Structures are given as structure tokens and as C-alpha cells.
Image 1 (cartoon, rainbow over the protein chains, first blue to last red):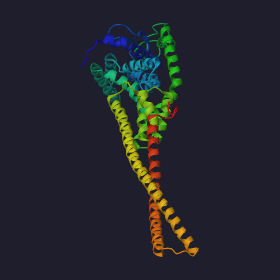
Image 2 (cartoon, rainbow over the protein chains, first blue to last red):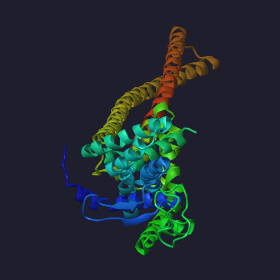
Image 3 (tube, rainbow over the protein chains, first blue to last red):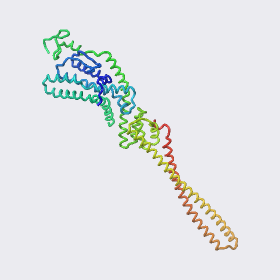
Image 4 (cartoon, each protein chain N blue to C red):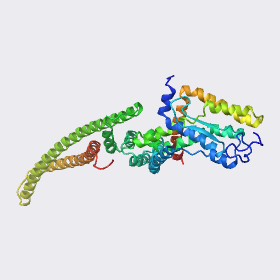
Length: 178
Length: 261
């Protein structure tokens, strides 16, 4: 296991951090949850944060928490898609293609919600007694903590490479069979 | 949340359903915190890059699909179809080592040796995965062995043709000698017939002996002529085979210009 300081990884993949916080902010906007402060990127831990009002609706808390997962994954895949075939398949990528791959992987690897997001969700879930909510929410919280642990073993990077690299390749393979 | 609280910004009635008391208007403003200008600029830059890249997407996507199909055809043994698909890929990526290697290997499997040779020459010295390098090197080796086998085949045929040429030459000489004997015998018997027709006495026994000898030689002549004709047909057939092998060998070492990119 290779240990690289987190801030170095954050610097190398800063677009992902920025998009992650933007996604939180966007979902807050959609849920009409007040945003007090946004730090898109900094040299610290966490590398970025969004300070917002605590939603009274636990579903909003869940949405705000998992927003980056959906947004970062989708955006990372879309951005990297045009470059995947030239770079991964034919090793004939231009500079532009490699920039897109870096952007796509950086964004996708910061899709995982943070433990801070998980803590917020857990607090919101414990305040409510809806069984359905707990059935949906608690596994998501558990996955987030597992993801955070897995990030020590490059799970976030693997996910980023999968979303930005392997997924489009699989799509091309599928289209070839049609 | 307290229903009696007023909006923390303007003092008007707060919107319900939220922890922080704000009226709908103030909530909308505070929830819609604007993104900084540099975010918009960065987003615009990414959008421009993405637009340029997406404009290339149809071409690269078609190439990716063509490559997958090429590999599928190659695995099934449909080398002609595989070559067509790989050629489509080279239109988009004319310098990709992987694509050129697969095209060369498939051309060789399909029997298009000269075209395969052209591409293999381009691949010399390039870096690739170990598996691909082994496959390409094996193809080069196979082509080399194929040329060697052709060369040996040509030599063997040449020896066979040479032997037939010698035999034909000997037969021609024999036929020539027999023809001479026949001419001499014919002249002698004609002279004797002429003498007999003039009433002169001839040696009947000698005359009949000469006629019998003539007929025997004619029989031998016809037999050797038949053998010669048969051998000549074999000679022509083997000569054609040798020339075909030589053509094949020459094509494998000097392909036509402009066949493959």
C-alpha cells in the first residue's frame, strides 16, 4: 500500500474537489437549503467544504450528501468519454485527450461523499424514526464510511478510472455487438 | 423550528419546513448563492475543450466500434471482414501500433503477404505489449519460413525441369539420328526400286532386309516421338508451376506500390 499525503492527491486532482463542492452547492440550491459558506479548494483537510443550513427534511440531507456521487460520476464519464478510445484503446491520444482523461478521472475519483457528509446524514437519520428512511439511509452511510476506508487503498482512484475509462470502453464494446 | 420567529434577514413571515427561519424570498436568494466568476471561466474552458473533443467523438467512436468488430471477425476466422474493419480504424488512427499490428497479422492470416510485409516494416522498433510483440514477431517468422519453403520448392522444381530438359535434348538427338537412318534407308531402297523398274537385277533378299530395317526404325521413331511429346507436356506443366512459384516469391518480397497505408 502506497501512502501519499492527501493534500498532494488533492492538488493533483483539484478539479474533482471543486466539482464535488459545486455539486453540494447545486443540490442545496435545488432543495432551497441556505448555503452560508463555500470553499471550493484549499490546502487543508478537508480540501473543500460547503457550510449549509441543516435541512429539516432528511431526504434533503440524503440528496445533498449523495449529490456529488451522482454529479461527479456523470460529469467525469462525459468529459473523459471522447478521449477514452484514442488513449486507452489505440494509445494515440493527443494532448487534449490526456487533459480530458485527467479531468474525467479527477472529477470521478472525488465522487465519494466525505465522512463529514456521512456524519451529517447519520445525525439526520437518527433524529427521524421512519423505517423506510433508515432502510435507505443507513446502508448509504455505511457505504460512505467503507468508501472512505477504501480510499486509503486507492479505491477512489480505482473508481475514477472505472468511471472515466472502463465504462466508456464497455459501452464501445456493447455498441460493436449491435 | 419556530412558527413564531420572523425572517432573520427582513423580518417578514418565515417559510415553513426549514430549520433556519427565512421568508421565501430571502431563502431563494441565500440558497442561490452565486458561483464565483472564476468557476464560470473554468467551466467555459472545460466546455470549449469538451466541445472540441466531442466534435471528434463520432470518428473515434466509429473507430472503436470497428476495432471491436475487427477483433471479433478475426477470432471467427473471417479475415477478409476483419481486414476491412481494421482499415476503417486506420483512417482515424493511421499511426496506432496496436491497429497496424492487428491489420498486419490479419492480412498475413488471410494470405495477403505483400500488404502484410509493408505494414510490418512500419512496425519495426516500436514499443508494444509483450503479447503483441510476440504475435508480430511470430508473424514475421512465419512469413520468413514461408519464403524459405517457397525458395526450396522453386529449387526442387528447377532441378526437375532441368532433368526433363536434358531428357528431351537426348530424345531430340535420338530422333535426329533415327531420322538420318530412315533417310539413308529410303534413299537406298528407292535406288534399288529404280534399278528394278529399269529391268536391272537387284538383291531381293537385301531389298527386303532394308525394308524390314526401315519399318523397324519407323516404329522406334514413332515410339520415341510419342515419349518425347509426353515428356514435353510434363516439361511445359512443370515450367508453368516454377514460374508461378517464382511470381509468388517475388510478390512476397516486393509488393505493389500504394497497396496499404
